[in-house]
Length: 504
Image 1 (cartoon, one colour):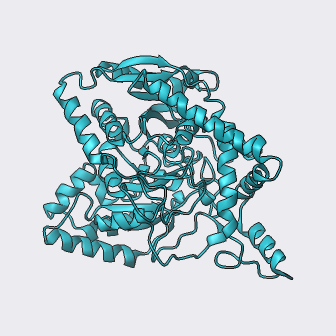
Image 2: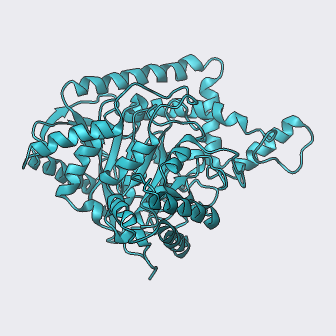
Image 3: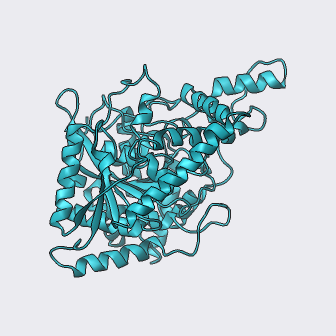
């Protein structure tokens, strides 16, 4: 039986903070224990690169800050980064052979800010290649296993992040969400994860997939643990042209919502209007997932919330819209990997054209090649108006649908995924089947809205195995703090987020 990491003995990040400040444990002890646990759980394949000397150096620096009385909420707390954030010292591969061995000369803004907050990085986490996938089976370095059931996918593309948190290897991790890649693996691994409003967290230094969709977000055991991590990550960055400024911070909106909930007493969510889209509960939603989500909605009603039926009529159309726009942007972003400046270069070629062709064929995996081809096609002369332009028009209509819904409700709730985690290799013969699993998350991403997943129960695996179910909570723009307060209220009334998989 593997030895649990030391941080699992404490009550979340707040418990770690108290223990570190009281000198019950040191940042070095936490870091070394986590590194040992990562090595013992190597079968999960959650980590792609660890560098103990770098981690322990950060931990020693954190201990010095604590001793000097300069600790913040995250000082000394172990974290890890999805392998699409560039990092000095640790390799950044984006799960691809194209970037095998690459070490960045600078840190992504997210990495920089978390390090400035005193968090101690344990290394880089496995992910679908260039964040393209829904099961973490597209990584060039092998799939990640779901800690709840090793036969199951952990979700993707941030599967390594979700699996590491679920297995207790790390208290929190960074991820990215283009079409659901924080929320979906959080749901399938039974952890909490939030995708903030597009533009609220800098994309500088994040390996690009779909530039108008990509957004960084954290994963952790609970909503309470997500708050300090997202607070450190968020904020305006002049190096990112899509970065927003001038809106209330995560902490401010959280504290305002939390204070109101606590003042309400026994029914802390009294008056909260929960929009429940009819389209999220139709054909295709598995019965076990529907039961768990329905039970969660009933719990919210006990807490004082009111259920409001709403409609998001273009839910089904989010899939074709997304899988035109995202591949189009991917084909543009990935054109930089040509074998000339950096990245994989073929060993033999006759001229520049053949070098580029061979390098890209060898460096990119099947799913990435598939999306590049789709994206290049829809952007080509004669098809741009018919496909890409129409998809962008549809995107605006989907965003308008959400705004009409928010005229009737305060938040929207429903399932994250139609089913529990699939078995590894289950969709191997139909490479586009995973695309359909994103039906409840894609519209939110196209609209740029904040949304999160919280554990709300379990469904059934193929052989009586328990596989987690996630509840999706969607808010209006820049309401991340309110979402976290609402989710924390639910997690105070339930214990789904406290249930852990057994180590194997």
